Length: 58
Length: 392
Image 1 (cartoon, rainbow over the protein chains, first blue to last red):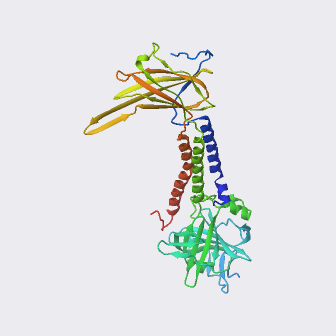
Image 2: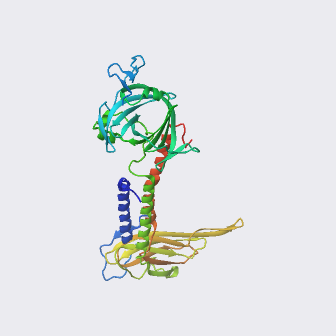
Image 3: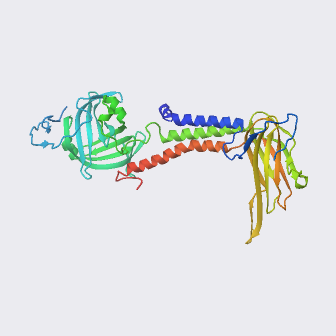
């Protein structure tokens, strides 16, 4: 359907699309939404009681 | 058989059987990019440069250069150069099919549009020729039709009608064919009238590849979504009268299964011309990681001028990316208005989302779209040189 030499001419476009598609699949697997995502501020508590169910902030 | 030739010293043009030196003498000489006798292989055929012509269009007075080539088996052909753009041109036997309505011809499944009509004169010739190029050029009306990178030439005079076909040839191809450095060729200016915007692929191939890639993205999305569990891991309703002295609601612990996935926290408040605001902290009980975010929802409605209206929503959604599996709870710090005193949340794990898919499709479409707009711009620039532009 598409001549081989034309596919060769489109190789950079196809390779770029495949790389983007790979990122898309990886993002879906790890649940990474590139946009429409809620902005979060991530912090880490170092002194968490392993047996405590709740702890308080603020 | 040679029917005309020039003297390399005095630049007089001789016709066969007519050796009167006064007939045609060229006043100026012009530099040649391809010397007489140079041999080059074009499309697998070896041609020798036999003659060189400089032609001038009689109406607009621009000049271009033609090199007559010869192969003992295939006969003669030409290389034509204008503004550093080259076409390889050869005679064809069969007449293309004409569409009189729009000045076009169909030949070998390509439609050629009329680009120019002109009468020309030879202002310089060097070498030997198989016909009287000076008189023949002077008495011939030439029409050129293009379907880049190809062209069709139609030469009409009182005695004959000749068709030629041509194809754009790059400096690099010509340099390799004749083993002459490309820097020796005239410098390229603008867009050649048969120069393709892309020499490596057609519009059709680009569009087909783009569509196939988009389809593949959509199928991938459908396939991946079929594995999304879309599990509600926690939901509850909270009332202001149960707020602790610390002004915080603390949800029970819930478990997020599996590896990293997204997490959706949907907030609902039964609002009527009111607002609700809360700060949320999602806490990983296993490693202490906190994810802080806020959500504000408001909903207003009324009846005005005979029409009811509303704005805002009673629902708010927070979508968190890449939340690892583990044990979690949420601390909620709400701010109630004077009217509303309750809200509820629903936490969903591994929700199918489509934003990434649309972003990928947009990225895939961008290149063909930009290319086709650029091509149209270039085509308009090409046809601006023509009296028969379809863009006028």
